[in-house]
Amino acid sequence: MVYLYLSIAIVAEVIGTSALKASAEFSRLWPSLLVVTAYCTAFYFLSLVLKTMPLGIAYAIWCGAGIALIAIVGAVVFRQMPDLPAIIGMSLIIAGVVVMNLFSTTTVH
Image (cartoon, rainbow, N blue to C red):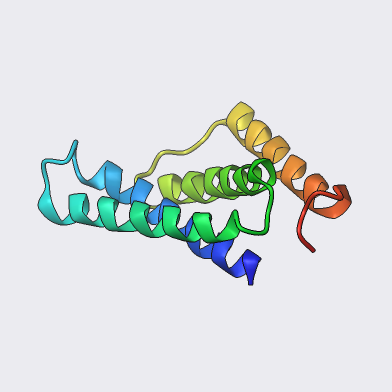
């Protein structure tokens, strides 16, 4: 259940960050409301995750998945294509999250 909650938190954060771009510095009502709702949802579910998963591990997974998903949303929705060094850097972050989940004894399995 902890990974389901973490997935919900990550998706909500990605929605909130995407809406933040669309809010045009909070000058558009509906995207601005979506930002607040999505971030509240994200932090609520992250708080549930932190009951059983260590903070550092949860945050690393949150950040790694969030970075990858936001890069995809940025490329597809906002036409912001990452260059090769950005792709390599994001790949290294994702690799670190995978290594942590596969080999760390501090993760929840």
